[in-house]
Structure formats: C-alpha cells, structure tokens
Length: 121
Ligand SMILES: [Zn+2]
Image (cartoon, rainbow, N blue to C red; front, side, top):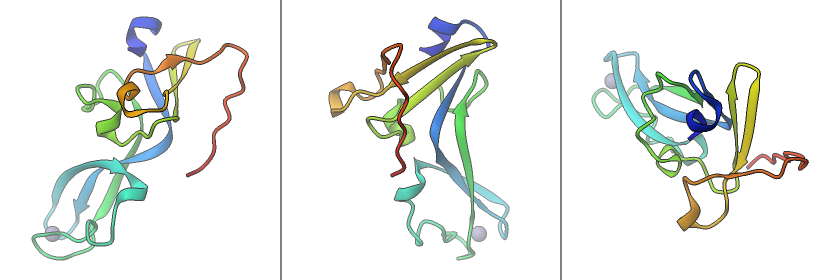
C-alpha cells in the first residue's frame, strides 16, 4: 500500500512497538507471536520448553524486506485509530486507520492539514 503511493524503498512506520516474537536464551529458540505488547501476558513470556523467561523481539516499522508484508495490520496487532507513517526518501505520507473492524487494514489518507495527534494506550 505504501509502496504504491511512495514507490520503491517505501517503509511504513508504526506509532507503537509491536511484538514480533519471543527469544528463549536458554533453548536458543525464537517463536513468532505477533500481537501488541500490551496483550502479552506474564505466561506468554515463559518458554513452553524450559520455563525460562524469554526476551521480546519488537518492531515498529515495515520495510521491503519485512517478514510481515503478507499479514494484515490487524494480524500484526495494530489497533484501529492508529496512525501509520509511510516514508520513501524525502516523500512521506500518513494514514490514520479508520475505526470499525470492517475498515481494519485499509488505511485512509489523513487530511493534509490535520495534526497527527497520537495518544498512548
Ligand atoms: Zn526455553
């Protein structure tokens, strides 16, 4: 989507960090667990194999080589109402995700003069 508007090399930045997955340093395993950081429980942090506390691997941008490009934004844990920033060199674009489940994953262009008000939570 950003690639269509911004051309090659486009990168989408998210306003919050999302969990990519969890690294177990004990077993050396990595498990993908795509969800917002706020939705991760203590229990999720425990390795199912050895019970050790796992380290979260976070991301907050999507680029050409991103492993998440085949996922929808809702699958990645991006909540409705969130703002996305697209960037390709000097060119930038911003979208705000419309509310409502039907609109998830189909960002609309933000009004040109609108301030991007980003709230936490
Ligand atoms: Zn483990």
